[in-house]
Image (tube, rainbow, N blue to C red; front, side, top):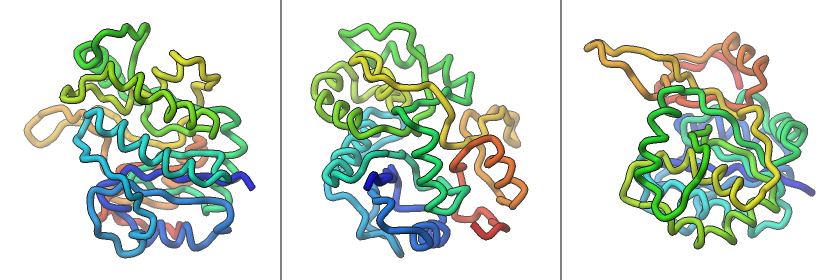
Length: 253
């Protein structure tokens, strides 16, 4: 059976652990596996899913790529894992488990990356990328959404080629590496991938704080309603992100 491996690159487990427990408990356990790279050992429900190999991660650093590779390695140990969906602790599912698995299999026949929602990040990232990569020229480069879907054969290629391609990345530079590495390497090694529908909605609209400073981070949800859920479903997303522990969720997911 072809399973979906959910790869959670996380500070702990999930901001809304109760919602995700219902999500996984409410579906067919033979359809999926869950793997969590956590910086914390604390979780009410998900400690059994923490992977053993941990990488000390920092925002924007190449360590995020290293941690993602460890998640992929762990998931590859189960030969039934065919689809690899990257998520985070602030993700929230928009569908029940069984339907999510079906939609992943239907929508992602190939490894798929998606365009970045933030124009500012795409422009700024070109400058930081040039600073953070040495001795190799990646042409026509830009940031993409870091939350991808991989097929198994391509996941294997990323693991097998990691030692080679990682040597070009300067690990102590902020280079938005998680938004560059995988699709960039996919292009270099000839993976047949799609630039297609993003799995995850993030609100990158330009906002100003109380001091008039423009925020360059995705908006955190204060609340989440049934109407919002339907809106993002209609736009073909599987998840939304920046759901916080304090987000008031008024829909039964």
